[in-house]
Length: 96
Image (cartoon, rainbow, N blue to C red; front, side):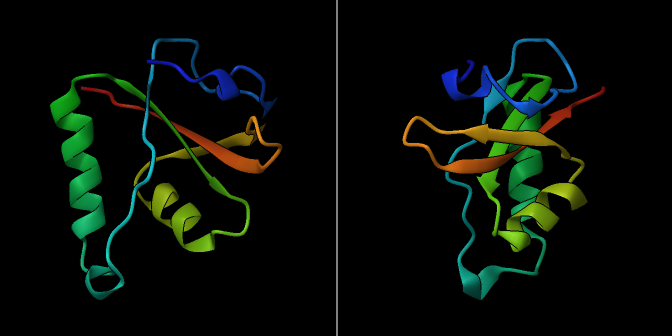
């Protein structure tokens, strides 16, 4: 758990707690807009059993940013990857 590139954020994380990071979240274009991505994300959040998640995406990736927001993720700021690339960072606390 944890990600070194999340240590510095231009903004602020919502919570100071152990977290899991989701990387490489992709749904085939032929299956997008049918709810499959939301179902998959919810399954990850439920089955992993960790209550706090962080994820990031390219600044220009409006589809992913909208998807994350529809699924309860909150935009927290901008991070910089080790290669210098900028990403928009999100987090979500699962309340049971």
